[in-house]
Length: 404
Image 1 (cartoon, rainbow, N blue to C red):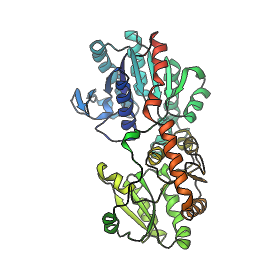
Image 2: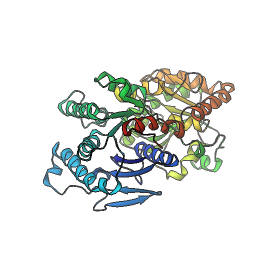
Image 3: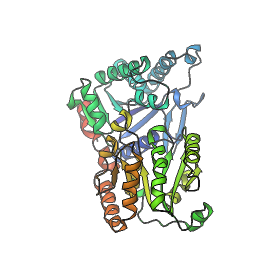
Image 4: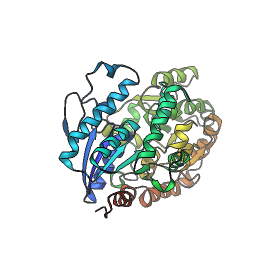
């Protein structure tokens, strides 16, 4: 089985998107399949046409030099056209059995064009609806012209792809609601590399002292500070938590668009002595910060994006046997069994967060069972061999052969 993956971006860039891709590619190769990979011009790889990263070879698409590439809307057409031309160069070389396009729809449209030209079936993998992400980032308004145009392109691609995959049930239901036959859509859920995570790491007391956190209990978040993550809800819960838990501190590790606003909010709430912002830390040091935290908190806001899409970080926390609390948005409900693998609180509600996290901190006798159940869940259901095995039937059905 020879599969050409059509991607928005890839490693060496770091994101949930690139990490999922890398895991899929490695597991498909472990199955004996030949994988090939091309990124669109949004990789921003300059004039570079090929690149090898982490043992994976990528074909790159140079950015358009046309003046149209600087104009709204038309710049998206340039992305599609450039990727279509690059696929026409690559396909005769690698002779794939399947084209596997990954979000956004710009990649799917280019792959569909190439699939039609060369007679190759196309799988389209939806990882999120990018029009919803644009609303959160402030580059689009819900139901505005750009939002509706992006949604229409997505639906157009979904209807024409030979098979559709997506990362969770929330997205699958939305896709089917657009008129896509249910038997055409397969969930390939996010997962973790079990072997990369171990249970039972101990806190680095030297680092804890360096951060001024000796003798404290720590809750916190590690990741990118996007608005939809709801970190403002966590900060607004701190005064109530601190009233009953004076030794409690909040550790926020990372950075992003909301960094300045969150720091200002901590000042406005008068809790700067209770919150530590580390800024971004090197990837190889992240595990050390995980080991400091007693409870990881994921306070995602309730909106289409978070209700439809499952995040990866709670799974990574479970793989490490961590104690976690999360808002009850749809994406979390698919991953976390309340009271069994974690604790859920009402989304957008600082009072509920404070009550549930406070109760969790006061009931450490529950922690061993929570840790064990979370780890067992990812070991049995949310690991990459289990997830990637689901591609076998899809590829096999499209090619009329066993995907081996």
